[in-house]
Length: 360
Image 1 (tube, rainbow, N blue to C red):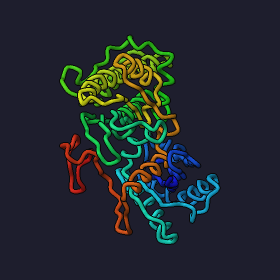
Image 2 (cartoon, helix red, strand yellow; image 1 turned 45 degrees about the vertical axis):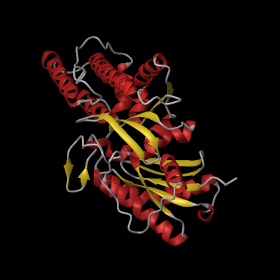
Image 3 (tube, rainbow, N blue to C red; image 1 turned 90 degrees about the vertical axis):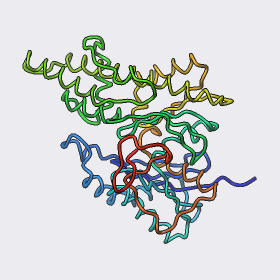
Image 4 (cartoon, helix red, strand yellow; image 1 turned 120 degrees about the horizontal axis):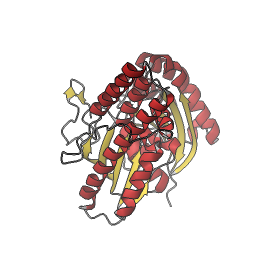
C-alpha cells in the first residue's frame, strides 16, 4: 500500500497567516496568526499592512507548524502554497516563502487556488465522494460549484456584487458593531426582532442561482438613517433588530438559491447526493440550521466542516496540494502569484474582467 503524502501548506491570501502539515486526510498541525488587531482601527483589511504582517510572521508560522507536527522539513513530500486569488501582497509573501523552502530543501512546489482549498475541505474532513455541490460563501466570494474532481469545478451561480461576508462586515460598520462583522452581527441578531424591518430578498424573483447583496446593504443604511434622524442615534435594541433583519434576509436568499442549485445538481443523478458549505460565513449558525433542514427535506447529506477549517487556514491548502500532487501536478520557480483565479474557467466572469483576468 502506498504511504499517504505529507505536505506543508502555506496560506496568506488575506489577513490570516497560516501554515499546516497534513498527511493524507490527517491534520498533524494547523497554525493561524490572525491580524484583526492590526486592522481594527480602519474598519477593514488594509492590504499593505496585511502584506507586511505576512512577511514578518510566515517563517515563524511554518516553524511552529513543523514543530507541532513533530516533523523536520526533510520528512515532507512537498510544499503547497496559495498562489491566488487574494490580496496580491499577501499572496506574493506566501509564494516567495514557499519557493525559498522548496529551493533549499529540494521538495516539490505546488501552487494551490485558495478557492479550491475551500471547495475540497469536505474531502479532507469527511472524505466526501465526487461529485458534490459546494456553497463557497466567505468575505470575498460566494458561488455554487459542482465539484467533480480536484480540478473539475462547474459554477452554477454566484454573487453578482458583494459577497455575503463583505455585506456582513459593511452592515457591522453601519451599525457601529466591531469587526469582523460576521460574528458581531450574528451575536447582535440573537437578541433582535427579525420582523421589525421589511428588508428585500434580492433576485428571488429572478430565475437561476445568482445572488445580489448590495441592495440589501443599502436598505440597511436607509433604515439606520431613518432611526438616527428620528431618535438621534441607535439603541442596542435597534442594532439587534437591524442585525436580525439583515441576517434573516441573507439566510432566506442563500436558502432559496441553494434549493435551486440542488435541483440542478440532483439532475445529474449523483449516487450519493451531498451538499457542503465552506468559507467564513459557513460558521453562521442560523444559515447552517436553515440549510441543514433544506437538505434533509431533499434526502441530501449536509456537510459543514468545523469552524477552524471553514475560515482561512493552511490545512485546506495542504490537502488540496496532496490531491494535486497525487494527480501528478508540480510547479517550479516560475510559479506566479495571482490576484484573480476563477475555478470554473469555462464560465463567463460574474464580476467582469481586467488586464489580469476574470475576477470571479
